[in-house]
Length: 148
Image (cartoon, rainbow, N blue to C red; front, side, top):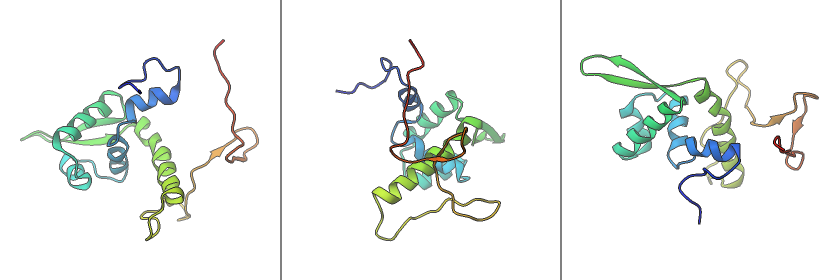
């Protein structure tokens, strides 16, 4: 049986899942990246329990994925803005979204498409080799251990 943490795993993916692997977390990140940055907006968008949202937001702030920024003093109110680490998760969210469109499709088609703001083209999440500039397709990826 899988434990509640991945402490005994020597794996970067497992460490990342400690931060973003809970079922609501990437949906919260998705919404923040879409511009829903206030607690009440996230609550309405996600249909999540207040205490769960509060807990997940605290964890994302603690791990440096989001930052909590005051937008009102009396009473104190905050927005949750993505940090550089949080913005990097856009690739993960888009890749997961596109995987879902291909492998768990909706009969109505994809509900959202990622667009390049510069030219309006439809973005495709993919791995690119920095040496040759070519895309790495399924079956063209290998890993190696970096520890002896």
